[in-house]
Amino acid sequence: MKKAPYQPTSAYVHIPFCTQICYYCDFAKVYIKNQPVDAYITALLAEVAAENIRELNTLYIGGGTPTALSAEQLDRLLSGLTQHLDLSKLQEFTVEANPGDLSDEKIAVLKKNQVNRVSLGVQTFNDKLLKKIGRSHSAQDVFDNVAKLRAAGFNNITIDLIYALPGQTMADVKQDIKHILSLNLPHVALYSLILENHTIFMNKMRRGRLDLPSEDTDFEMYNYIIDSLEAAGYDHYEISNFGKTGYESAHNLMYWDNAEYYGFGAGASGYVNGVRYKNHVPIHHYLEHADKQAVEEKLTQKEQMAEELFLGLRKKSGVNTKQFSEKFNQDFEVIYGQIVANLIEKQLLEQSGDYIFMTRQGLMLGNSVFEAFILDDE
Ligand code: SF4
Image (cartoon, rainbow, N blue to C red; front, side, top):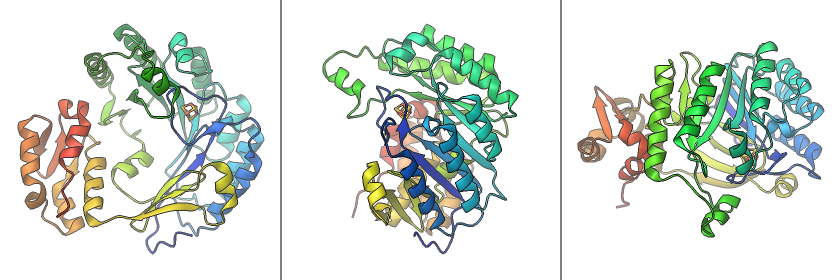
C-alpha cells in the first residue's frame, strides 16, 4: 500500500506477456506460452484493490502486450479494473495492442470496458523490415485493425513507429510517413531505434552484424518526419509524439509534467508521495511477494528538480521557470541561469518569457541538453 496523503490521478498497469519477442526490446516481458497468466491477472487485480484509489483521470495498460491475453483474460482484467477503480472522471483509458493479436472479439472487449484510446505497436509498414526486427504482424494487419477499430467506434487511435532500423533507407521512412498520412490518425509516436543491452540486436551489433543507418541519416529521417507531420497538421508536442489538436496523450503528458502516478504489475514503476518505486520482476517473484514493491527511492530535491527539467524539456512547450522556482522554492535563474545561457549560445535551447524549450537541434541532441542540467553534489 502506497498510502499517499495526496492521491495521484493516473495509473499504469503492466501486462508482461508477448506473442513474439522483438529483437530490439528490453522491456519487462516474456513469451506468453506456458506462463501463469490467470494467476498474474488475479495478483494484479488484488494489488489494485489493495490501493484505496479515488477518481482516476488517466489509465494506461501497457506491456509487454495487453492484447497477448485471450479475449476472456482481457475481459477479466479490464472488467476487474473498472470494478476496483473509480473511472467516473476518467479522461483517457489507453490499451496498447499488437496488430497481429487484435481480433474482433478483443476489440469488443475493449469497447465494453470503457477503453477510449488504442495504441498500436506498428513499428514500420514495411513487411520485410517487420520480419527483420522480429515482429509477427504485417502492414495489412494494421490497415485491417484500424478499419475495425473505427467501425467499433474508436476514433482515438495512435500508432508507434520506429525509424533508423537496420537496413532502413530514407525512401523507406518516406513510405512509412505516406502510410501514416493515408490513415489520417489523430496521433502518432515515432522513436529512433535505441540499441539496448541484452537484446538480440545488441548481440548482432557486437558481432558486427547490424547495418544501422548513420547518425546523419538518423537526423535526416527525424527532420523529415517532423517536417512532414507538421505540414499535415500534427503538433509536434513532445520529442517523439505528434498529435492533432485535442489528441495529445493526457497520460504521457502527466509523466512529462512530472506528476505522480500508480504503477501496477510485475516490473511496473510508480511515483507516489515523492517516492519512485519499482515492482518485483520476473513474474514469479511478483506473484510470490505480498508487498509488490521491490525498490523504493525517495528523491532528494536536487533529483526532483533534475527530473522536472529532463521530463519538461521533452515537451515543445518546455519548462516554465517561474513555476519551477515556486514549486521548489528555489530561484531558477540563480541555479541554472548560466547553464541556460550556454545552451542558448549553442542554439540547443530557446527562451521566451518564462519558458525555456529546446530548439530543433536541441531535440536531436536531447541528451546533451539534459546532461548540462545535472548539478554536481556539493
Ligand atoms: S516490443 Fe512490445 S511486442 Fe515486442 S517484445 Fe517488446 S513488449 Fe513485446
